[in-house]
Image (cartoon, rainbow, N blue to C red; front, side):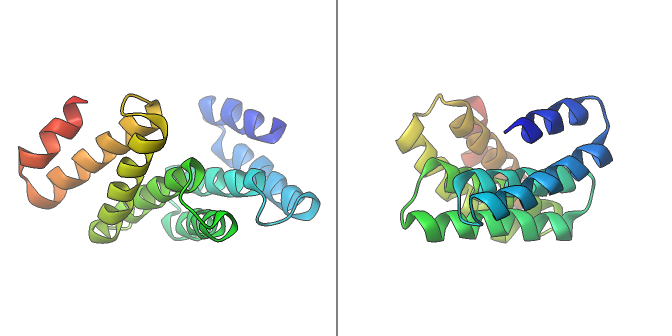
Length: 152
């Protein structure tokens, strides 16, 4: 947890490479101490993937975020807020990799699940709606479905 807070501070300061190093050490340490399937490990792994995504290292980002998403689905056996957010993160990486058709169902699942579990006005649900709206506009260049999502 402390390493993730340090990552946020370093990222905000533009020190992404140093933040990445700390987060990699955190993921390794968590895997060793609490295990690869533990929620904290999966969160750190997804955060590492999103940091790599912001650095333009999309293939490696996909590996980490997909690992967190798959790990959370396997460990919980059911849909929960963490794996929905991991799915949303994976969709964002897939969009950067120019694979929007793979991203769309992940964003739809995240939106539906987060609306149900956290409520339509929760920040995670609003983020999913915004990301899906942008993706739909990109894919179809049609405001029909995208606009109501963007207006939430």
